[in-house]
Image (cartoon, rainbow, N blue to C red; front, side):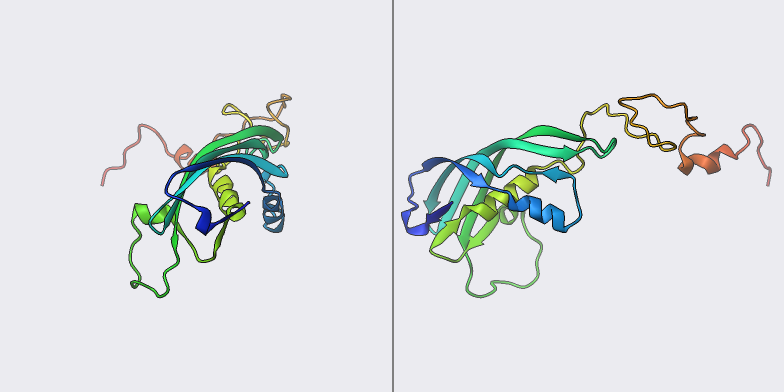
Length: 182
C-alpha cells in the first residue's frame, strides 16, 4: 500500500488492509534459511498522522506463519500478532554529523524522500523484527537424539544418554578429595 505524503494530515487516520509479504519467503530462500514460511499477505491495522515534517505510524499485524523448530526440526504453525510503531522523517540533504552513537529515539526513526510512502517494505521489516530469534514448537520440546536422530517428542530411543555435556568432560577427570600440596 502506498500513501501520498501530501494526504497525511495532523489528525490521525486509521486503515485496515492486507499487505503482501510473500517476498519474505524469497529472502529466506536466498539466504538458505528455512526457519520461517510466510503467507501471501498479512492483516494490518494502521493509524498514521503528521507532526511537522515527521510522519508517525502505529498499529498491529496478525497472520499465520510457519516455523521450523530449532530443537526437533519439525514444521509448526503459529500466529504472529504484534504491535508496532515507527516514525519517518524527511531524509536529510547532507550528513548532519560524523560518526556518533545512536540514541534510542533515533533507532525508531527511518527516512522518507519521495512524494509517497510505500508501506510494503516497512511492514515486512516489522514482521521480521517480530519473529522469534529461535523458533520452538513448544517450550518443553525435547529435540532430537544426538546419537540416532530420533525425535524425542514422538518416539523413545534406546541410545545411552552418554556421559553428559561434552564441555564438562575435563571436570569428570578430576579426583575429588585429593589435594595437591605445594
